[in-house]
Structures are given as structure tokens and as C-alpha cells.
Amino acid sequence: MSKGRQNPTGAGAIIALLIILGAIGGGIFGQPSIGLLAGLALGILIALLLYLRERGK
Image 1 (cartoon, one colour):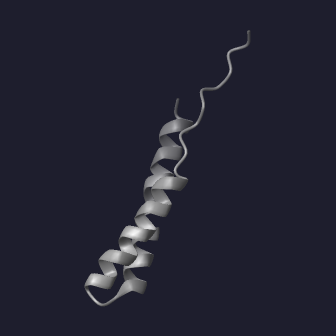
Image 2 (cartoon, one colour; image 1 turned 60 degrees about the vertical axis):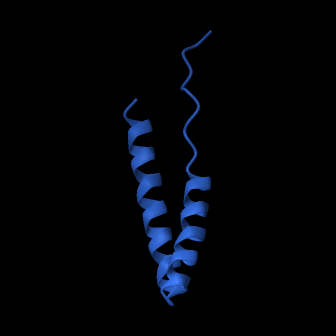
């Protein structure tokens, strides 16, 4: 057997969850669009960090 790479960690669910939570949180404060964008930005940041962690292995 060849030494294959491990299965990568997916971040799609994290991004989707943070978008939804951001929209809900923003809605509570009367700014759902800003909450959605903040959730998206945080989700992308976490996905990027996961990618960089996996790339280093």
C-alpha cells in the first residue's frame, strides 16, 4: 500500500452554521445583514485555519 494522505477536514458545515448563527444574532440586534456577513467572515477564517493546519501535516 502507498502512504496516502489522510482524509482532509471539511469546513463547509462550520461555515454554514456560522452564517446562520450570525444572521440570527444580527437579527436580535436589528442588523441581520451585518450578522450574516460577520458569520461568513468568521466561518471563512476558521476554514482557512483548518486548511493551513491540514496542509502542515
